[in-house]
Length: 245
Image (cartoon, rainbow, N blue to C red; front, side):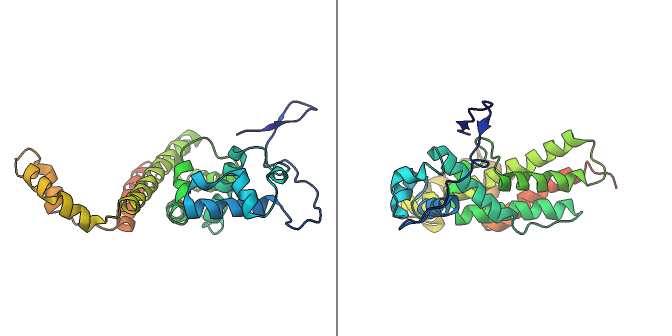
């Protein structure tokens, strides 16, 4: 997290706690919320490469230098964008004692958010997200298991939540990559099968890949949502084995 420095005690002044400039009349009034929403609209349309302080300022009909009163770097802007999406995820997350329902809901809402904002998947699993909404997401995840009977302390809770997060991030990134690949090549699954099917048939016919034969010929190949749910169940079922009756 890029941060300014508080000259009084040399403690980092993070963007989450830095006051916004006083409101002043202007043809294009600004605040952090408007800046972040404009940046998200640019990223949703054209990806993270379309986001810069200059482009956001242009979208808001404001001079780029005005934005520096609200944030210092593009990294801070990305942090704020990520945290706004976390706010979408946690806005209606379940609150209760059902740890499985809570973790499932958070996983589904994360996947849904990544579908709305494909760039969000690119920023998952990177540097720590410590905005207030990201912290609320972590709190909900940890609290769900911390309240469950049978877990041997907070270390076990952290390991279980890490396993869920690793699965969700991997699945979300995989789905996002597939969507981008289809758009970039202009081909869908049927077209891929037409192009590569004869080669795959010849390779499978060699007898060197008997299990892959089962995968291609016998597996049902469900849709992305069903596949996501099935993988998530494997993770949650594994966690459940560590809980006392």
